[in-house]
Image (cartoon, rainbow, N blue to C red; front, side, top):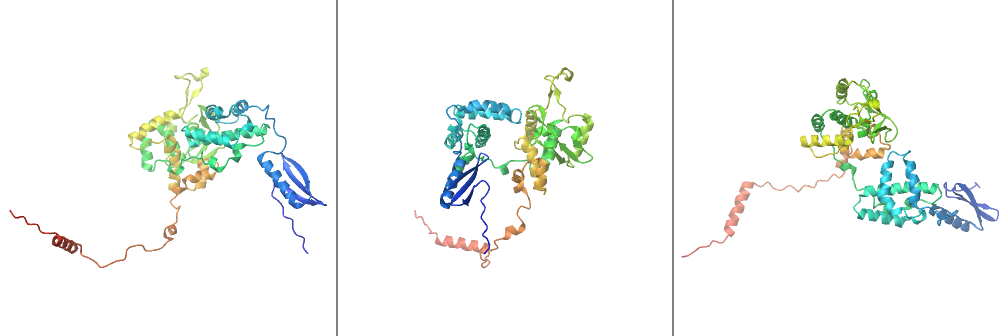
Length: 410
Protein backbone atom coordinates (compact mmCIF):
# COMPACT_ATOMS: atom_id res chain seq x y z
CA UNK A 1 0.00 0.00 0.00
CA UNK A 2 1.58 3.33 -1.02
CA UNK A 3 2.38 5.73 1.79
CA UNK A 4 0.01 8.67 2.00
CA UNK A 5 1.77 11.96 1.37
CA UNK A 6 1.49 14.28 4.33
CA UNK A 7 -0.14 17.60 3.50
CA UNK A 8 2.24 20.50 4.18
CA UNK A 9 0.99 23.71 5.73
CA UNK A 10 1.86 27.06 4.22
CA UNK A 11 4.80 29.07 5.49
CA UNK A 12 3.96 30.93 8.68
CA UNK A 13 0.92 28.75 9.46
CA UNK A 14 2.72 26.49 11.95
CA UNK A 15 2.99 22.71 11.95
CA UNK A 16 1.32 19.83 13.82
CA UNK A 17 3.01 16.44 14.21
CA UNK A 18 2.31 13.28 16.20
CA UNK A 19 5.06 12.59 18.74
CA UNK A 20 4.47 9.29 20.46
CA UNK A 21 1.28 9.51 22.50
CA UNK A 22 0.96 13.31 22.15
CA UNK A 23 0.89 15.93 19.39
CA UNK A 24 3.59 18.57 18.87
CA UNK A 25 2.83 22.14 17.79
CA UNK A 26 5.48 24.39 16.23
CA UNK A 27 5.19 28.02 15.10
CA UNK A 28 7.30 31.15 14.67
CA UNK A 29 7.01 34.17 16.92
CA UNK A 30 9.13 37.32 16.45
CA UNK A 31 11.54 35.35 14.28
CA UNK A 32 12.01 32.55 16.84
CA UNK A 33 10.64 29.01 16.68
CA UNK A 34 8.23 28.04 19.49
CA UNK A 35 6.86 24.63 20.55
CA UNK A 36 3.93 23.26 22.54
CA UNK A 37 2.21 19.89 23.04
CA UNK A 38 -1.40 18.71 22.98
CA UNK A 39 -3.04 15.39 23.97
CA UNK A 40 -4.83 14.86 20.63
CA UNK A 41 -4.98 16.22 17.10
CA UNK A 42 -8.21 18.19 17.57
CA UNK A 43 -6.82 20.05 20.58
CA UNK A 44 -3.56 20.70 18.74
CA UNK A 45 -5.40 22.31 15.83
CA UNK A 46 -7.42 24.52 18.18
CA UNK A 47 -4.31 25.57 20.08
CA UNK A 48 -2.45 26.43 16.88
CA UNK A 49 -5.39 28.43 15.53
CA UNK A 50 -5.55 30.42 18.80
CA UNK A 51 -1.79 31.05 18.74
CA UNK A 52 -1.84 32.26 15.12
CA UNK A 53 -4.85 34.48 15.84
CA UNK A 54 -3.13 36.05 18.84
CA UNK A 55 0.02 36.57 16.78
CA UNK A 56 -1.97 38.36 14.08
CA UNK A 57 -3.50 40.67 16.68
CA UNK A 58 -0.15 41.26 18.36
CA UNK A 59 -1.20 39.81 21.71
CA UNK A 60 1.48 37.13 21.99
CA UNK A 61 4.91 37.57 23.53
CA UNK A 62 5.92 40.19 26.05
CA UNK A 63 3.60 43.18 26.12
CA UNK A 64 5.21 46.60 25.97
CA UNK A 65 5.28 48.82 29.02
CA UNK A 66 2.22 50.97 28.38
CA UNK A 67 2.53 52.94 31.63
CA UNK A 68 5.93 54.45 30.86
CA UNK A 69 5.56 54.40 27.08
CA UNK A 70 6.33 57.67 25.26
CA UNK A 71 3.63 59.55 23.41
CA UNK A 72 3.43 59.67 19.64
CA UNK A 73 4.49 63.30 19.69
CA UNK A 74 7.72 62.38 21.49
CA UNK A 75 8.41 59.58 19.04
CA UNK A 76 7.53 61.63 15.96
CA UNK A 77 10.14 64.36 16.49
CA UNK A 78 13.26 62.19 16.05
CA UNK A 79 11.52 60.13 13.36
CA UNK A 80 10.79 63.22 11.23
CA UNK A 81 14.34 64.43 11.85
CA UNK A 82 15.75 61.19 10.44
CA UNK A 83 13.55 61.47 7.34
CA UNK A 84 15.28 64.71 6.36
CA UNK A 85 18.33 62.70 5.29
CA UNK A 86 16.52 59.82 3.59
CA UNK A 87 13.31 61.15 2.00
CA UNK A 88 12.93 63.81 -0.66
CA UNK A 89 9.43 64.81 0.51
CA UNK A 90 10.32 65.20 4.18
CA UNK A 91 9.03 68.77 4.21
CA UNK A 92 5.59 67.59 3.08
CA UNK A 93 5.65 64.86 5.75
CA UNK A 94 6.57 67.34 8.47
CA UNK A 95 3.79 69.68 7.34
CA UNK A 96 1.17 66.91 7.35
CA UNK A 97 2.18 65.87 10.84
CA UNK A 98 2.21 69.42 12.17
CA UNK A 99 -1.12 70.44 10.63
CA UNK A 100 -3.19 67.23 10.66
CA UNK A 101 -1.69 64.25 12.48
CA UNK A 102 -0.06 66.02 15.41
CA UNK A 103 -3.19 67.68 16.84
CA UNK A 104 -5.01 64.34 16.74
CA UNK A 105 -2.34 61.88 17.92
CA UNK A 106 0.52 63.74 19.65
CA UNK A 107 -0.87 63.19 23.16
CA UNK A 108 -1.75 59.52 22.60
CA UNK A 109 0.47 56.55 23.36
CA UNK A 110 1.05 53.83 20.74
CA UNK A 111 -1.30 51.30 22.38
CA UNK A 112 -4.11 53.90 22.47
CA UNK A 113 -4.28 54.23 18.69
CA UNK A 114 -6.71 51.71 17.22
CA UNK A 115 -9.02 51.41 14.22
CA UNK A 116 -11.73 53.44 15.95
CA UNK A 117 -9.36 56.35 16.65
CA UNK A 118 -8.16 56.38 13.06
CA UNK A 119 -11.73 56.32 11.75
CA UNK A 120 -12.62 59.30 13.95
CA UNK A 121 -9.62 61.14 12.51
CA UNK A 122 -10.62 60.33 8.93
CA UNK A 123 -14.26 61.30 9.42
CA UNK A 124 -13.32 64.52 11.20
CA UNK A 125 -10.97 65.62 8.42
CA UNK A 126 -13.46 64.80 5.69
CA UNK A 127 -16.19 66.68 7.56
CA UNK A 128 -13.84 69.66 7.82
CA UNK A 129 -13.53 69.83 4.04
CA UNK A 130 -10.15 68.15 3.59
CA UNK A 131 -9.80 66.29 0.29
CA UNK A 132 -9.98 62.52 0.44
CA UNK A 133 -6.61 62.21 -1.30
CA UNK A 134 -4.96 64.41 1.35
CA UNK A 135 -6.53 62.35 4.12
CA UNK A 136 -5.13 59.26 2.42
CA UNK A 137 -1.64 60.77 2.41
CA UNK A 138 -1.95 61.42 6.16
CA UNK A 139 -3.08 57.87 6.92
CA UNK A 140 -0.27 56.37 4.86
CA UNK A 141 2.25 58.61 6.63
CA UNK A 142 0.87 57.43 9.98
CA UNK A 143 1.27 53.83 8.82
CA UNK A 144 4.91 54.44 7.89
CA UNK A 145 5.48 56.02 11.29
CA UNK A 146 3.94 53.04 13.10
CA UNK A 147 6.25 50.67 11.24
CA UNK A 148 9.13 52.49 12.92
CA UNK A 149 7.34 52.44 16.27
CA UNK A 150 6.87 48.65 16.03
CA UNK A 151 10.55 48.17 15.16
CA UNK A 152 11.54 50.10 18.27
CA UNK A 153 9.32 47.89 20.42
CA UNK A 154 6.86 50.60 21.50
CA UNK A 155 3.95 48.79 19.78
CA UNK A 156 3.17 45.22 18.85
CA UNK A 157 1.39 45.89 15.56
CA UNK A 158 0.53 48.58 13.03
CA UNK A 159 -3.13 49.57 13.53
CA UNK A 160 -3.41 50.92 9.98
CA UNK A 161 -2.61 47.47 8.55
CA UNK A 162 -5.83 46.05 10.04
CA UNK A 163 -8.20 48.87 9.07
CA UNK A 164 -11.52 47.56 7.73
CA UNK A 165 -12.48 48.18 4.14
CA UNK A 166 -15.25 50.55 5.20
CA UNK A 167 -12.66 52.92 6.68
CA UNK A 168 -10.25 52.63 3.76
CA UNK A 169 -13.06 53.46 1.35
CA UNK A 170 -13.57 56.82 3.07
CA UNK A 171 -10.22 58.26 2.05
CA UNK A 172 -10.05 56.71 -1.40
CA UNK A 173 -9.30 59.37 -3.98
CA UNK A 174 -12.33 60.42 -6.02
CA UNK A 175 -10.20 61.72 -8.90
CA UNK A 176 -10.46 59.74 -12.10
CA UNK A 177 -7.13 60.11 -13.98
CA UNK A 178 -8.91 59.26 -17.21
CA UNK A 179 -10.71 62.61 -17.03
CA UNK A 180 -7.50 64.65 -16.76
CA UNK A 181 -7.56 67.20 -19.61
CA UNK A 182 -4.74 67.58 -22.12
CA UNK A 183 -4.05 69.31 -25.42
CA UNK A 184 -6.03 67.03 -27.71
CA UNK A 185 -4.82 68.50 -31.01
CA UNK A 186 -1.19 68.73 -32.04
CA UNK A 187 -2.04 72.00 -33.75
CA UNK A 188 -2.91 73.43 -30.30
CA UNK A 189 0.49 72.28 -29.00
CA UNK A 190 2.11 74.22 -31.84
CA UNK A 191 0.02 77.33 -31.12
CA UNK A 192 0.92 77.32 -27.44
CA UNK A 193 4.61 76.87 -28.27
CA UNK A 194 4.56 79.89 -30.60
CA UNK A 195 2.73 82.01 -28.00
CA UNK A 196 5.32 81.42 -25.27
CA UNK A 197 8.44 83.60 -24.86
CA UNK A 198 12.02 82.34 -24.92
CA UNK A 199 13.21 80.15 -23.22
CA UNK A 200 9.86 79.10 -21.72
CA UNK A 201 8.74 77.86 -25.12
CA UNK A 202 11.75 75.50 -25.31
CA UNK A 203 11.05 74.09 -21.84
CA UNK A 204 7.42 73.61 -22.87
CA UNK A 205 8.49 71.74 -26.01
CA UNK A 206 10.79 69.44 -24.02
CA UNK A 207 7.99 68.61 -21.60
CA UNK A 208 5.35 68.12 -24.30
CA UNK A 209 7.49 66.06 -26.71
CA UNK A 210 9.64 64.11 -24.22
CA UNK A 211 7.22 63.65 -21.32
CA UNK A 212 9.60 65.00 -18.68
CA UNK A 213 8.52 66.32 -15.31
CA UNK A 214 9.01 70.03 -14.64
CA UNK A 215 12.02 69.46 -12.38
CA UNK A 216 13.55 67.09 -14.93
CA UNK A 217 13.21 69.68 -17.68
CA UNK A 218 14.97 72.33 -15.59
CA UNK A 219 17.69 69.86 -14.60
CA UNK A 220 18.70 68.93 -18.16
CA UNK A 221 22.29 69.66 -19.22
CA UNK A 222 23.61 69.75 -22.77
CA UNK A 223 25.71 66.68 -22.11
CA UNK A 224 22.40 64.80 -21.63
CA UNK A 225 21.18 65.74 -25.14
CA UNK A 226 22.38 63.48 -27.96
CA UNK A 227 21.08 65.08 -31.15
CA UNK A 228 22.92 62.61 -33.41
CA UNK A 229 21.74 59.57 -31.45
CA UNK A 230 18.23 61.05 -31.08
CA UNK A 231 17.98 60.43 -27.36
CA UNK A 232 17.77 62.34 -24.08
CA UNK A 233 19.42 61.00 -20.93
CA UNK A 234 17.38 62.02 -17.87
CA UNK A 235 19.67 61.85 -14.82
CA UNK A 236 18.71 64.62 -12.39
CA UNK A 237 16.06 67.16 -11.51
CA UNK A 238 15.67 70.50 -9.79
CA UNK A 239 13.84 70.14 -6.47
CA UNK A 240 13.32 73.15 -4.17
CA UNK A 241 15.84 75.14 -6.19
CA UNK A 242 18.60 72.51 -5.87
CA UNK A 243 19.98 69.81 -8.12
CA UNK A 244 18.95 66.38 -6.82
CA UNK A 245 18.21 62.80 -7.84
CA UNK A 246 15.17 61.74 -9.83
CA UNK A 247 11.91 60.74 -8.21
CA UNK A 248 12.73 57.04 -8.46
CA UNK A 249 16.53 57.61 -8.23
CA UNK A 250 17.02 55.78 -11.55
CA UNK A 251 18.10 57.47 -14.76
CA UNK A 252 16.33 56.71 -18.02
CA UNK A 253 16.70 57.36 -21.74
CA UNK A 254 13.95 59.16 -23.66
CA UNK A 255 13.67 59.14 -27.47
CA UNK A 256 14.18 62.52 -29.08
CA UNK A 257 11.09 63.26 -31.19
CA UNK A 258 11.62 64.49 -34.73
CA UNK A 259 9.60 67.64 -33.96
CA UNK A 260 11.80 68.48 -30.93
CA UNK A 261 15.23 67.90 -32.50
CA UNK A 262 15.40 71.09 -34.65
CA UNK A 263 14.18 73.20 -31.72
CA UNK A 264 16.98 71.94 -29.48
CA UNK A 265 19.54 72.28 -32.28
CA UNK A 266 18.66 75.93 -32.82
CA UNK A 267 18.56 76.57 -29.07
CA UNK A 268 22.03 75.08 -28.66
CA UNK A 269 23.44 77.45 -31.27
CA UNK A 270 21.78 80.40 -29.55
CA UNK A 271 22.97 79.54 -26.02
CA UNK A 272 26.39 78.02 -26.66
CA UNK A 273 25.53 74.41 -25.85
CA UNK A 274 27.31 74.22 -22.47
CA UNK A 275 26.08 73.63 -18.93
CA UNK A 276 22.36 73.57 -18.19
CA UNK A 277 19.87 74.04 -20.99
CA UNK A 278 18.11 76.67 -18.90
CA UNK A 279 20.97 78.46 -17.21
CA UNK A 280 20.26 79.63 -13.67
CA UNK A 281 20.95 83.14 -12.49
CA UNK A 282 23.24 83.68 -9.50
CA UNK A 283 21.95 85.25 -6.32
CA UNK A 284 19.09 87.65 -5.80
CA UNK A 285 19.24 90.63 -8.10
CA UNK A 286 21.97 89.16 -10.32
CA UNK A 287 24.69 88.42 -7.76
CA UNK A 288 28.14 87.24 -8.76
CA UNK A 289 28.96 83.49 -8.71
CA UNK A 290 32.57 84.17 -7.67
CA UNK A 291 31.25 85.60 -4.38
CA UNK A 292 29.54 82.34 -3.46
CA UNK A 293 25.97 83.23 -4.40
CA UNK A 294 23.78 80.20 -4.99
CA UNK A 295 22.34 79.63 -8.49
CA UNK A 296 18.68 80.54 -8.89
CA UNK A 297 16.94 78.16 -11.28
CA UNK A 298 13.79 79.06 -13.13
CA UNK A 299 10.82 78.59 -10.81
CA UNK A 300 7.84 76.40 -11.76
CA UNK A 301 5.56 79.31 -10.83
CA UNK A 302 7.16 81.34 -13.61
CA UNK A 303 6.42 78.61 -16.13
CA UNK A 304 2.81 78.37 -14.96
CA UNK A 305 2.33 82.12 -15.27
CA UNK A 306 3.58 82.26 -18.88
CA UNK A 307 1.53 79.18 -19.78
CA UNK A 308 -1.69 80.72 -18.46
CA UNK A 309 -1.18 83.79 -20.65
CA UNK A 310 -0.40 81.68 -23.72
CA UNK A 311 -3.48 79.47 -23.29
CA UNK A 312 -5.69 82.54 -22.91
CA UNK A 313 -4.16 84.13 -26.02
CA UNK A 314 -4.86 80.94 -28.00
CA UNK A 315 -8.44 80.72 -26.74
CA UNK A 316 -7.79 77.37 -25.02
CA UNK A 317 -9.15 76.26 -21.62
CA UNK A 318 -6.98 76.70 -18.56
CA UNK A 319 -4.56 73.79 -18.00
CA UNK A 320 -1.70 73.18 -15.59
CA UNK A 321 1.87 72.80 -16.76
CA UNK A 322 1.69 69.05 -16.08
CA UNK A 323 -1.51 68.67 -18.12
CA UNK A 324 -0.11 70.69 -21.00
CA UNK A 325 3.25 68.90 -21.16
CA UNK A 326 3.75 65.51 -19.52
CA UNK A 327 0.10 64.40 -19.63
CA UNK A 328 -0.29 65.66 -23.20
CA UNK A 329 2.79 63.69 -24.28
CA UNK A 330 1.52 60.44 -22.73
CA UNK A 331 -1.95 60.87 -24.17
CA UNK A 332 -0.71 61.69 -27.67
CA UNK A 333 1.78 58.80 -27.49
CA UNK A 334 -1.02 56.31 -26.85
CA UNK A 335 -3.34 57.91 -29.40
CA UNK A 336 -0.55 57.50 -31.95
CA UNK A 337 -0.45 53.76 -31.32
CA UNK A 338 2.50 53.67 -28.89
CA UNK A 339 3.01 50.71 -26.56
CA UNK A 340 2.13 51.10 -22.87
CA UNK A 341 5.29 49.24 -21.88
CA UNK A 342 7.44 51.64 -23.91
CA UNK A 343 5.51 54.57 -22.45
CA UNK A 344 6.21 53.27 -18.93
CA UNK A 345 9.94 53.35 -19.59
CA UNK A 346 9.83 56.78 -21.19
CA UNK A 347 7.72 58.29 -18.40
CA UNK A 348 9.77 56.65 -15.64
CA UNK A 349 6.81 54.94 -13.97
CA UNK A 350 7.80 52.32 -11.40
CA UNK A 351 4.85 50.13 -12.39
CA UNK A 352 2.85 49.66 -15.56
CA UNK A 353 -0.26 50.04 -13.41
CA UNK A 354 0.36 53.80 -13.35
CA UNK A 355 0.77 53.85 -17.12
CA UNK A 356 -2.46 51.92 -17.68
CA UNK A 357 -4.47 55.04 -16.85
CA UNK A 358 -3.88 56.00 -20.48
CA UNK A 359 -5.11 52.66 -21.86
CA UNK A 360 -8.60 54.07 -22.50
CA UNK A 361 -7.08 56.21 -25.26
CA UNK A 362 -5.78 53.27 -27.28
CA UNK A 363 -7.52 53.21 -30.67
CA UNK A 364 -7.43 49.39 -30.74
CA UNK A 365 -8.85 49.01 -27.23
CA UNK A 366 -11.94 47.31 -28.73
CA UNK A 367 -11.54 45.16 -31.79
CA UNK A 368 -14.07 45.45 -34.58
CA UNK A 369 -15.58 42.10 -33.57
CA UNK A 370 -16.46 43.52 -30.14
CA UNK A 371 -19.05 45.78 -31.76
CA UNK A 372 -20.90 42.87 -33.40
CA UNK A 373 -21.24 40.40 -30.53
CA UNK A 374 -25.04 40.81 -30.33
CA UNK A 375 -26.27 40.55 -33.90
CA UNK A 376 -29.96 41.43 -34.05
CA UNK A 377 -32.06 43.74 -36.21
CA UNK A 378 -34.10 46.10 -34.02
CA UNK A 379 -35.50 48.24 -36.84
CA UNK A 380 -39.22 48.63 -37.32
CA UNK A 381 -40.80 46.31 -39.92
CA UNK A 382 -41.17 47.97 -43.30
CA UNK A 383 -44.79 48.83 -44.40
CA UNK A 384 -46.49 50.11 -47.54
CA UNK A 385 -45.00 53.23 -49.12
CA UNK A 386 -47.22 56.25 -48.47
CA UNK A 387 -47.08 59.46 -50.43
CA UNK A 388 -46.52 62.30 -47.95
CA UNK A 389 -48.30 65.08 -49.96
CA UNK A 390 -51.45 63.01 -50.49
CA UNK A 391 -51.43 61.89 -46.86
CA UNK A 392 -51.24 65.50 -45.63
CA UNK A 393 -54.12 66.52 -47.97
CA UNK A 394 -56.28 63.70 -46.66
CA UNK A 395 -55.65 64.66 -43.02
CA UNK A 396 -56.55 68.31 -43.74
CA UNK A 397 -59.82 67.36 -45.45
CA UNK A 398 -60.79 65.04 -42.57
CA UNK A 399 -60.15 67.75 -39.97
CA UNK A 400 -62.22 70.34 -41.90
CA UNK A 401 -65.14 67.87 -42.17
CA UNK A 402 -65.16 67.21 -38.43
CA UNK A 403 -65.03 70.92 -37.47
CA UNK A 404 -68.62 72.28 -36.85
CA UNK A 405 -69.69 75.23 -39.03
CA UNK A 406 -70.80 78.24 -36.95
CA UNK A 407 -73.20 80.80 -38.41
CA UNK A 408 -73.93 84.18 -36.91
CA UNK A 409 -77.37 85.79 -37.54
CA UNK A 410 -77.68 89.51 -36.94
